[in-house]
Image 1: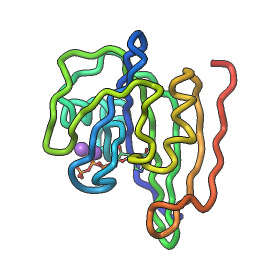
Image 2 (image 1 turned 90 degrees about the vertical axis):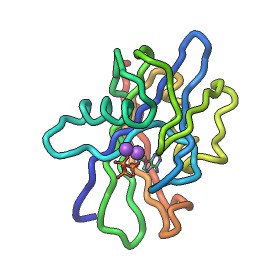
Image 3 (image 1 turned 30 degrees about the horizontal axis):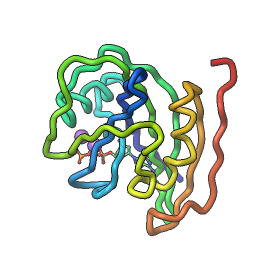
Image 4 (image 1 turned 180 degrees about the vertical axis):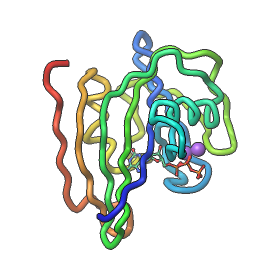
Length: 159
Ligand code: 6U4
Ligand code: NA
Ligand code: NA
C-alpha cells in the first residue's frame, strides 16, 4: 500500500432497544450491502466533521453524540490504495432516519444483524461495537473484494 483514503463509518445504536441502524447501500462502493453510514473525508474537514456530514447526507440525521470506537485499515490485493476507516457510534441524534439517494435505512436487533448481506469483515468486529469495546485492525481482501486473505484485530483494553 502506498497511499490511503480516509473514510468514516457510523453506527447508530439504540442501546435500550438493542438495535442498530444499517443502511442498504444503493450506489457506488459496496452497493447492495448493508453497512453503517459514512464516506470519504473531504479536504478541509476533520474526520469527525466528515462523519457528521455523511450522517446528514445519507440518513438526514444530526448526531448529538459521536464516539470514536475503532479504526480499521482495508486493503485489497493488487491495489495500492488503503482505506483507513474511522468508526463511530452515535446513540443520540436529531431527526428521524430517512431514505436518501445513497442509503435505505433499516433497524436490526443485535441478534439479527444481517452479516450475510454485509462486508465480510463486519462479523469479526461488530461484537466489539455491541460490547462498547474499542478496537483497531487490518483486513486484506482478495481482488474480488470478498475473501479476506488475512486480518488482525486488536481490542483496546481499559474501556
Ligand atoms: P461518494 O459516492 O463519492 O459520495 P462516499 O459516500 O464519499 O462516496 P463511500 O460511500 O464510497 O464514500 O465510502 C465507503 C463506505 O464504505 C465508508 O463508509 C466505509 C465503508 N467501507 C469500506 N470498506 C468497508 C469494509 N470492508 N467493511 C465495512 N465498511 C466498509 O464495514
Ligand atoms: Na457513503
Ligand atoms: Na456520501
